[in-house]
Length: 542
Ligand code: XMP
Image (cartoon, rainbow, N blue to C red; front, side, top):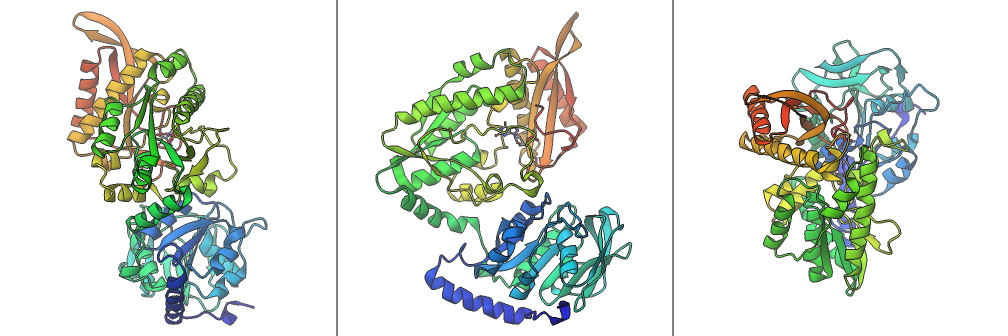
């Protein structure tokens, strides 16, 4: 059977079918998540999570599925759209991941991106060939106006990254746009769309508009149906109450970060004093952070069990060279200290964690692959503990957790606080660990953050901090020649920490940061600025 024989329902019919599902569904299912969602078939590209975020921002809840699960998932009545992600494979390769052709018979809107676009062509009888080689910003020329490209000019810049291309569209498809080299950049048949470019990345300036169009015009989500994480709060509270029951207590490790704080506030809202936040101070927090965290919980009227174990942590870390060793030390000691604190909470049967969706669903880029760093989350589930696990935020992305946090009344300093590694400043001291270098990093990072806040830049960057290693630089202080440390300042922009770029700060700001660090921390004689993106560097130094 080729593409012409497929019984594509048109958009209007499709929307009516979907609406009748909604009406029936309302009676038996939860009004939001159960009803309308998109699935993103993850072909292993690094962008599948980005696609999910763009769809959710456009008002359609979206989850990732693997190709082998795609047909089953797509057939569920609550799934109203299917997105086929990009991926590193070639559809021309026998072993490339694929999906059942039957997915296209379901009559649900499909959007194929890059590899997904080529897969549509291959499965529906078009032709795919090798050798296009379009990488980076590329001009695209519209041949035909279509709802999905509404708001696009006749010529638009889009971001491409492909070697294979659709040499001939399947019959029944029309070509909507061509790249400047003349390759098919967008095509459609009914509500099945393929785009060769990546609308999910920031380098495609109108990418968000394409997702808006797909969600509102092709899938047909109405303004009142838009998914919004804040609307999920009552359901989350209800789910926590139902899961935990009426007797048990829940412990949760808090660190002041937005994920653990939002989790703790949700738990306390749902369970009152049966939720017990435990704050272990490992001595590796940012300047004044431990005091601020305690004050914040106090202001929220939430009782926290506080354990100051900083001496024990610092003693064990003293003299270590390798950050991976430090991660293990911090992780293990955290488990010990936390376990002891939790054992003092009567009837504590549950451990809550601020796990987010990207931690639950690995992106294709890391499926089965070694992680570069053994990111130990200090609020992680201590192995061997007899707790049941509660993860109320496991379906959300960070920006959604921030929105929930704001709606719960958390202060902006917490909601918009930069991500901070579980082992804290231990991974910002390079080489031999000692308290002197720890204090240098702490003070220098504080200066970096403070200057960025003054310049109104703190909220606009992903992370900003200082690191110190064992390199020295000769300095002149007064008449004396002194040997001091080199501090490296890193200010990064990122969407998800998978890739990141350094931020070009103004000369005056860099100069102020450098001046303050060398004058307020006498042991530092040189400040350098890190200008390597990720990849090839990681964000943290070790
Ligand atoms: P890298 O350095 O791998 O970091 O580019 C990516 C993101 O993860 C954070 N990071 C950690 N988070 N435990 C954590 O909980 C860790 O050991 C750890 N190491 C790095 C880092 O701050 C960045 O946001």
